[in-house]
Image (cartoon, rainbow, N blue to C red; front, top):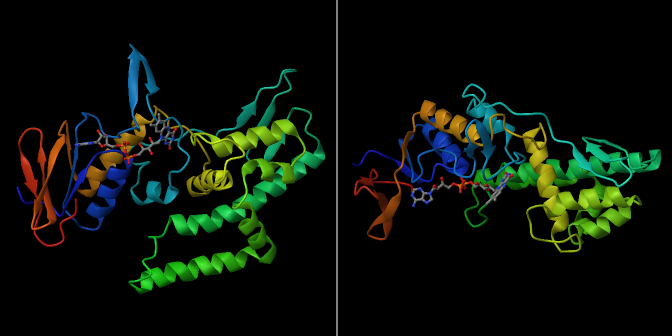
Length: 291
Ligand SMILES: Cc1cc2nc3c(=O)[nH]c(=O)nc-3n(C[C@H](O)[C@H](O)[C@H](O)COP(=O)(O)OP(=O)(O)OC[C@H]3O[C@@H](n4cnc5c(N)ncnc54)[C@H](O)[C@@H]3O)c2cc1C
């Protein structure tokens, strides 16, 4: 069959988002996945009759709201919970609670609260800068086209808007680790350790590891992109997979589940199609076929 401009292997959230945008741009897209449900790691499983759980990814924290809007994921059934608060349990039951810009409990005083608000304000300004980067195609300097020049100009403008002091802060803190940054900003030990945990979660790094300030900023940027902050998908992560699949189909993409790719077809050193476990082959349209 030679019907498609693009074949996407894998109906995980990345494949589905990609398929939707390609289909929205008028391309004929086929998405194939070896599993029988869409979503990849965004999946929900019944572990005992009547009880379901997100069985791989749990938290939605990096999902760009512009995708939710562009692909009308709410119309496709996506429902998000409230932004999560972080609770750090304390032995005397006066637990530390971080909720947005507010911190309470664990004997936090007005000075700590003000320091936390200032810290969040600084992080938000860096997250805004990173959002510009995350929403742009990485510039290809050799091509020197206008889209890439515009990306670099926008980035330059964002850096300028940070102001001299903030820019200096950014240059300095990305070089050090979250442990040092916590010690610079706070004296309260539970507050320091709770924030440091956010920087290292899912990274296999410790608070003194290099790049932990970047991982904290990456998480904060996700919250900025998501607007709702880190949250959970109502119905489990599988509900995100289903909404994305529905949205991709609404845009005109074709989904083929239970269809594992066993080979990628190559003609004259170019990828031209895929072969499925069933033996069926999909050879793309000639020209700028993408796989
Ligand atoms: C244990 C764990 C916990 C995580 N927790 C979180 C979290 O809480 N929050 C978060 O944001 N991220 C989390 N992540 C990361 C997140 O799951 C991944 O970033 C995300 O799944 C990547 O999406 P994807 O679409 O690129 O790939 P995947 O979700 O991995 O999807 C790939 C798809 O490709 C299909 N496929 C593979 N090979 C073939 C083939 N040959 N033929 C056909 N289909 C094929 C697979 O069946 C699968 O459906 C976690 C990851 C793990 C492993």
